Image 1 (cartoon, rainbow, N blue to C red):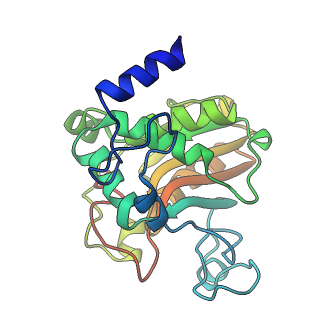
Image 2: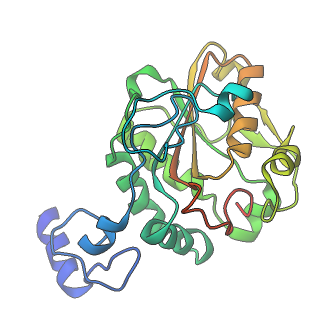
Length: 253
């Protein structure tokens, strides 16, 4: 019955691609049309074993990048589903800035279905979304990381906890700031409200876009301070040099 109703809905209200007006194949599960799906660049090896940044050369082995050697991140592992450009950038923009929360659910399903090299969901105890400050939450009406995180946590069978991480300081948007200024802008902005839920635990922090890593670094720092044993970061997209457009990403959150 459920399959029949879905087929009927697809005929009456045909689903369209999250990035373009193309009508999706009836009964299909992908949220992007074939043309747009083919334009999404996956984040794959060779890449940094810590922050997950892909290296430009197609050949080679995974290793720690120069930035992480000079300034090791407080998290233990970071990976992203795709590059923040083209169809994926367009879909995220529609989700965040045009209040299309249903798009967020579909992106969460797409994110969960992507390969995550080196990440084993069974190794982790809780999944936490990056929080918005209350002022930003009132303006937008929803937290995109909560919508994505709830779907991904369900798919991975990891307990979802949106209350542990709190954003206690409202800072200016990060747009236009360099790496150093971005880090200074969010320093001390996050805290763990229920340390008993994370002490000695392996934690996943989930966000929509990894730009410079400033936001997730501070989240990981707060969690490690509260006793987390290990912190992994998963993001829907990552801004990569050469394909990066400095639009409203981290902290136009």
